[in-house]
Length: 123
Image (cartoon, rainbow, N blue to C red; front, side):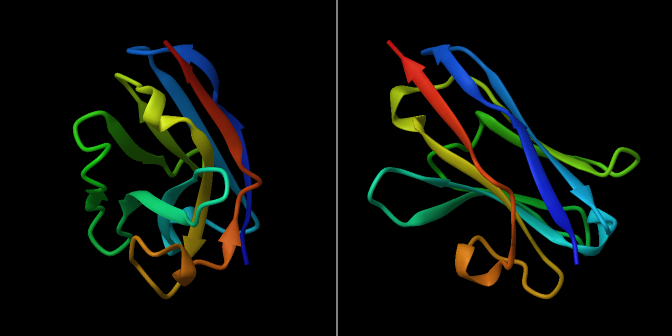
């Protein structure tokens, strides 16, 4: 089992940057595929960035490709999401999640979740 605690997020002007961090406790994040997920109010959660544990590969939703970067720091047992060139459509609650068995962008495949951070982008 792993416990995930998130930090970061907040408010920024459009075009600005924010960084989210997800700290793991109880187990090394190396053992997990990790995903950053966002959720708009009243909508389902959608995966935006995936880290594949088997080869360190990454995958991004088209809407964030080139702007967001998912990166692990295994020495610190953390996973970051660097978000650049933020747009109003990026306003959402962001969650990190981990799975020891599945490796996909589908939030349904993940059982360990952080508490969520709000990201707000104003014009």
